[in-house]
Amino acid sequence: MLRHYGVDLLDWHRGQLSSRRLSVLVRHLPRDSALIRALHGEAADWSVTDYLLASVVDQLAEANWMFATVNRDEDSEPLEFPEALPRPGDQPEAGPTHRAGAPTAEELTRFFL
Image (tube, rainbow, N blue to C red; front, top):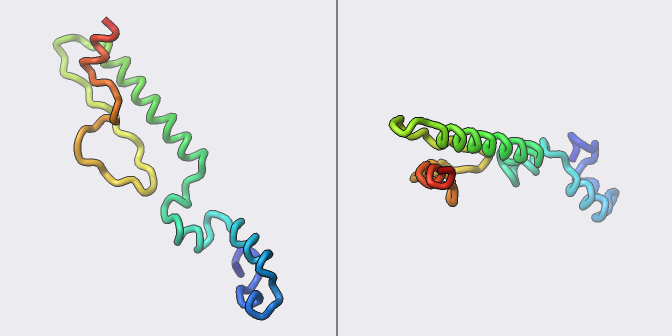
């Protein structure tokens, strides 16, 4: 509170800061505040725009993978499915490298032929 607003939290206890004003100040703390970092961890560093850009990059990588998979020689080895960009709070998954519901290389080949 003191760093961002210049308001001492003890002012609320002293009666110099109303509960409503304190509530408004806490609700509108910036993402780099200690409270927001304590509540949300690494996710506080990412905005909605950052998540959307990561999603766009993932979708573009998948589209490129689909194009390359469909247009490869039949005798060549299958291409690896691209990994998603890591997001804050994501845990590494053990198991298949592609997303649930994503088509396999064989399904794409059958679809486009």
